[in-house]
Length: 354
Image 1 (tube, rainbow, N blue to C red):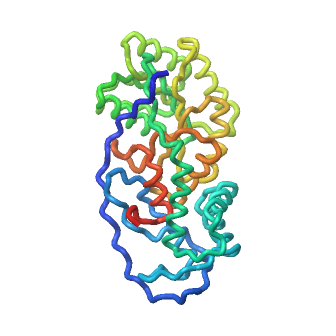
Image 2: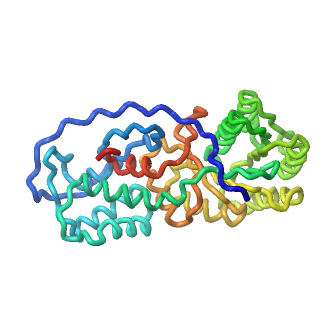
Image 3: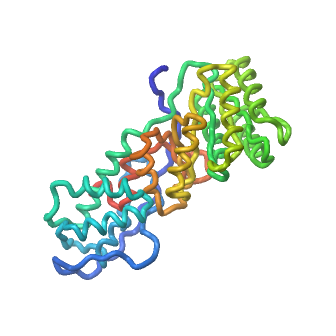
């Protein structure tokens, strides 16, 4: 295959920085720290800053290690076993998963046990560790000279597959690529209509079939049309399916088999669209879809609506699959490249310039 060519994903203006809260009264140098009894973790939702402007500092979940936010002269705490255990629990609450949380905390603590650290220092160390884990998986969708390059999009119900396909089609079309969409969710009329709207908006043809038709047959026909037209890309939507339904997963496997009758190397990309709000369930989804459809990359949606983006760290640590793009809203430019450093800073609530 040809070298990876970054997919043309437009940038979004940086949101205005949040106001920094007034500094509360100073704590003594050895004030105790404690976990909250209840309430959601304070993880900011604007994960995806794509401009060069620094992220505004937010409290993040690490502020919970201390009873109050750090004042100008930050108190420092000894990094001991109790503090490390508190950090591990907070990372688990952020949906990072037990194994990844323990590994991240251990790496942060290596060579630093017994040292006094401020909240700011812990945030910076943690952000660096998270960015290190995420950097290898932050890769754009690779483009190949093969025509058509077949991109199969899979995922569970409501994960955002249809919207993601529409955004990808519009972005590729705007970059001068010829695109064909196959509306393979033949069981849900709303999905077909949604793709048709995107197709009209982007000038991309959308192949459909009567409701209830065999999606594998539609995929086969769509490949024939894309080949005849010399299209650069064929994006194939599929019906949302639960990963624990054997019959639905077999239907997906059939689509893959039929596609390969036209082109033994297809699908050239299989994108699994994951809903960030599903938390740790995303791990089992990757496990099953990877086995059935040979998933080659991930798109994570709804990062604007969850306080538990740590699941991305768990996914990167466990599977190492490329994260091609992330969704932070419904507009076309809300499908953005994944930036590991911006994500890490936003997750822990630290300023880029800190």
